[in-house]
Image: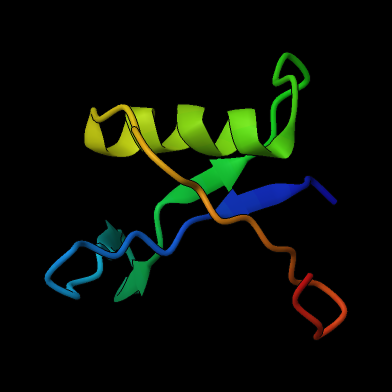
Length: 75
């Protein structure tokens, strides 16, 4: 299974970015920005920065609080 990363991007005024996905023959759904970790990514954090830039054409500046989900526990 491909490793994936997602980000909960929250602004100073407490709004959160979610992306609406539409695909043929699939009901509309919403996701957090992110995607797959590629072989050339130096880390999960690097993959997340790349994915965010690809999806919203923005470079993150400032703190990125990272955590992991998978076994039900956040790290």
